Image (cartoon, rainbow, N blue to C red; front, side):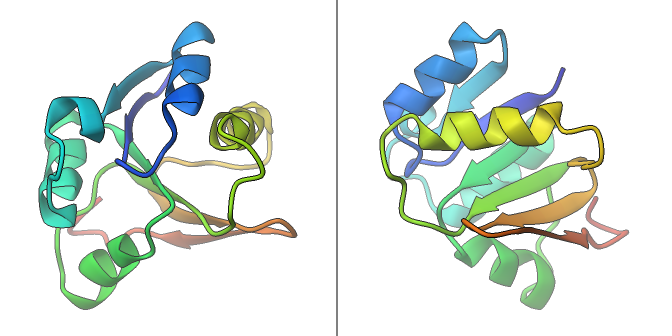
Length: 123
């Protein structure tokens, strides 16, 4: 099972739902409220956690500014319909046999899932 770091914008209800499902989830909001995106990225990398977020800035940090990436990033590119939706979508991705999360930047919209390999030097 994967270990996850939830960015501050992931609702507490989603974090609780993931924990209840037995997923090892740390919350940036609990670890250090107001932590910068760079610090969140570094924490996920150091602890070997998949970063889940609603913030598109992480792609910029990794691909354009060259920051080292965590094992994976899952970017939810939609406004959640409810506080549990991030957890529901992540669990669906993890349970889907054809989608590999680790080593990829995964963008999830309402209509599709797109993936891009993380840079070799950062993954």
